[in-house]
Image (cartoon, rainbow, N blue to C red; front, side, top):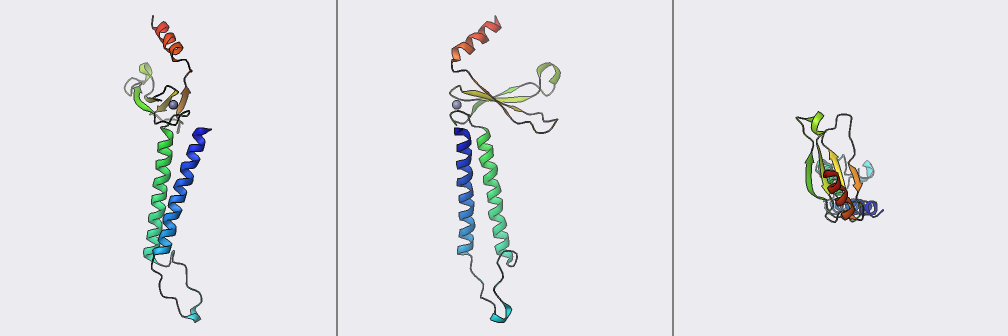
Length: 150
Ligand SMILES: [Zn+2]
């Protein structure tokens, strides 16, 4: 729940920043002189003023970049404590997929809450990252790993 609230907060802040940028563009952009009354109301600037239209496109591109950065950052965060995941570990091999497994990268939470596995091989379409939460007792997991290696 905390993970999704953090994403929602970042999306709201990003949308607010981009809307503020667009509002600043509209506010500070010099207005052209109004047309004569017989020509009706002045047309909107968007699509009628090339510089304003390109500036709006620039704001849209900044918004798309902000949205990409938000999701890129969110993908690499712990689902429990929201810290950035660390220590990428490459598993598998491109040259030996049959014997070593498919290439993937694993990221872990610095406080041991879980592991995120990201497949590098996307043959059958986009595969979403796999989050595996760890048990609270890290010694039990370590002991089972040690027992398995005996
Ligand atoms: Zn964590």
